[in-house]
Image (cartoon, rainbow, N blue to C red):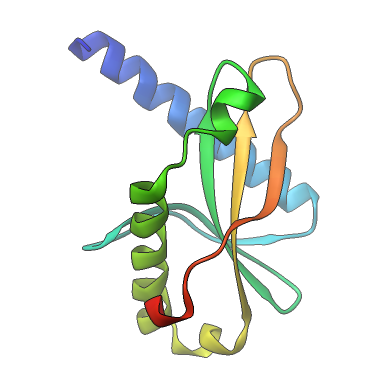
Length: 125
């Protein structure tokens, strides 16, 4: 992938994340952070709704199906590691129910929000 292609992909990703954040806000989530970075990895969106703390991965793909299959085991480990880092920095959030969602953005489609898209093993926490 050339530099121009990487830049276009980065721009598409940022736009998808902004749209996903707006989508969650419209669904009465409070977005706490965008692109939270830690040594373990990055989380696209951290949001809260009621008693749930949501770590959301945003996938911009040509189709919803492609987005659903885009998050593999390495990505899940990266997100759960970054979630642990979030909880270490925000210990008050540890009492909330933790959830991992995926939001798939496809052209000319409504976002597809997969609630509880994956779980981590209890020993990971």
